[in-house]
Amino acid sequence: MNSTPQPLSRRGALLAGTAALAGGLGLAGRTDAAVRNPERARSPLASLTPPQRAGQCVIHSYPGLTPPARLMDAIRQGRTAGVIFFGENIKGLSQIEGVIQEMKEANASAPVTAPLLLMTDQEGGLVRRLPGEPVLSAKEVGASANPEGQAEFTGSGAGMNLAGVGMNVNLAPVLDVYRAAGDFTDQYKRSYSKDQEAVGTCGSAFITAQQDAGVAATAKHFPGLGPASANQNTDLGPVTLTTSASTLRSIDEAPYRAAISAGTKLVMLSWAVYRALDADRPAGLSPTIVGELRNQLGFRGVTVTDALEAGALRAYGSTAKRAVLAATAGMDLILCSSRDAAQGDEAVTALSDALMAGTLDGTAFDAGAERVNALRGSLS
View 1 (cartoon, rainbow, N blue to C red):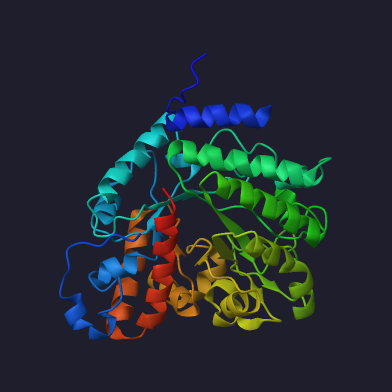
View 2 (cartoon, rainbow, N blue to C red):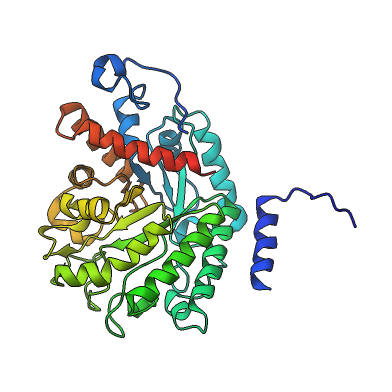
């Protein structure tokens, strides 16, 4: 038997790993941006054009199986931080691996050469974009004989599955603490438990195992959609939750404290309004709630919005307006997931215009972009 290790392809590593489970920032091409903006001369973003600078905080999407030229141009020109993939983009593992390789090749000529953020929702159960692991839903994991062990298993499976096709971010796990059978989170089996400590334990195990496989985890949806009733769906319309601040902090935020201790690299904020924390704005548009995550829970990673096209934001105008409001609130990544590359471009243009006009705080924006690029630099 030859004892010399043989190199494995990504696909081979995925298959081998599944079998085992079952048994920075690079910048080029300076422009006059630093001259036009002398206060940014020391920033690593200073050599970027305004649209490139704005694009460091935008995630694009696209329809169908073939990325449009518009999206590939945005990648080559450095006007996007990455791409989110949906079921309609994926015919099979080989097909999506080929698409991702094309994106990586396009990114090689961009002014920012750090890896793109290539992400999907691979929670397990009903919410999976790729075939394969994790097969179990969060609820099934939580109800198993060994919830923590099963959560570790599913996290490893998710990580190896995504890494096997070249993705490096999973918009999972869900850390919502559901309240009643059949409520918003429970009806899709997306919650581990009614008990916040059990959710924290399972979520942390999933996060650690997935990130050990090289795929960044995203804890969602802060500060928690567990109190939402069956018909309170932020994808479809505005949702207001009247849960007390003390309950939100002791129950709903508790799993995030565990996730942050486990090193989750991203946190997604919800689009619900939490009257006890900020009666006026959804969490992802609220500097107060972003501040709670940063200052009270101590999160230092990347914040990401939920889908910018969500029905919960219908009162907040166009993609352009929503993007600027989210960035103003302190969101690092703007998720443009309508399966239309033009949506991402609209967000980039709006952020670029706001930065040039001074209506968006450039120092705060660049701090978020630097967090995003640090994340990109840590991935492959």
